[in-house]
Length: 208
Ligand SMILES: C[S@@+](CC[C@H](N)C(=O)[O-])C[C@H]1O[C@@H](n2cnc3c(N)ncnc32)[C@H](O)[C@@H]1O
Image 1 (tube, rainbow, N blue to C red):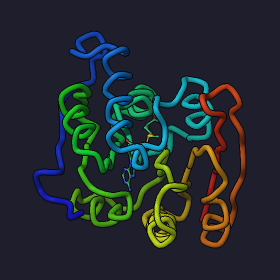
Image 2 (image 1 turned 60 degrees about the vertical axis):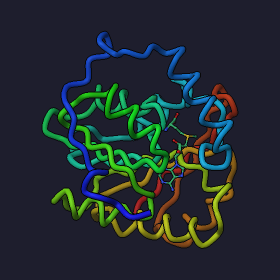
Image 3 (image 1 turned 90 degrees about the vertical axis):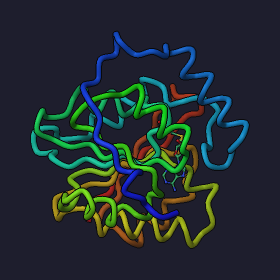
Image 4 (image 1 turned 30 degrees about the vertical axis):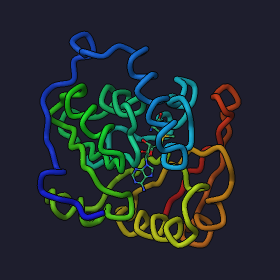
């Protein structure tokens, strides 16, 4: 899928209190979209706060200026990244599903956030179009297990190329399918586990 200029949006200040849709409606939108695109979503509900906190505890916020999120969905991880990140940092959220893109554009107005309708494999093109250099962090919860092997390999390799020398790729997944691809592309892969998520999730911390 090509990234169009219209797909790149910069939107206003995130104010949870003014969100039109509540948690319940967000869960419903997620579940309804899962029924239409089960392989694309890979989960019927968004990540739990346990998983979100575990993943985000691995970020050094002081040095994170360019953060990329793959597959923000209804913004469960996104809003927690926005709460923690520096005022001068940028979060680029790359989402394949156009309903989620429209949702985030309407519901998560924060000038530090760019929501882009594209595939994760286009990350370097997206960063280039936004005039951003390499990423300090890529945070990814896209379902690598459900995609063709070539796409899995391409996204992992493009992620590594998109990172700066001190950058890190943080992946959370229900399976270890992506692990061999990470180990062949990255110099170091550290593994973690969060049992309280539905389903229990593995976390991979990868550095070049
Ligand atoms: C399991 S959901 C995770 C949603 C959210 N990040 C969370 O943790 O609750 C996976 C998300 O990845 C998106 N996705 C799947 N393949 C993608 C791809 N190649 N590029 C970008 N987004 C993708 C789906 O549309 C969905 O929003």
